[in-house]
Image (cartoon, rainbow, N blue to C red):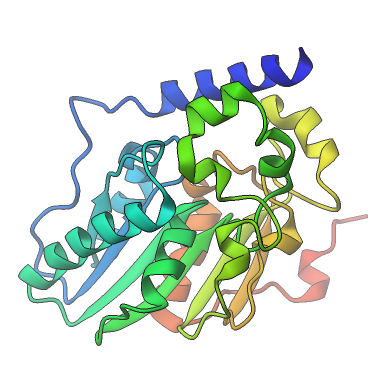
Length: 258
């Protein structure tokens, strides 16, 4: 019963946050920027969840292409092969010189799968927010639930840990990658967070967000569903796209005041 109530609350939250404002969220717009950024939302969300980040990227001089895709309907492989070429085409038609990616949650796994065999020549940098790069114990725990299987579809079943899950079957990354993950959980993830070993964001543990070959890694005090909207996260995302690294605080500045 507890697990069912938890799933109902998660689904209600995702449905609310999937609603676009004034119609469907755009997949990017014409711009004169020389660098394009393809944004990919997570499982059960829509491009609207990445709209604040897209606006910030545009304000910083990038051309954002905020992709919408049916995350609950198909496998990760199918979603990647259908969605990323559309995003790349939008960028290339605008004549940009460099193409970056910014992803949330499962969107990062789409990018890893796609770039493992179809890397564009003008690939720039990639920023992943709370990615289940080594799977998620939350998916392990919920995968047999009928409600979870119905709502999250085939892609949700692929996010389990170990070699059963698609993340565990992908190799190290070989492109410039910055990973930002959280160490706080939202109110509706409180009991699920207790089931995940170590520090986590309510869906993915800090350790499972990491992937071999990544360029930089930073942990910030935000939860899985909301991390992409935090001003600090957006600032760090822009920093990595510009410089290829995050802005890390020195130890003395990171300590809490006594």
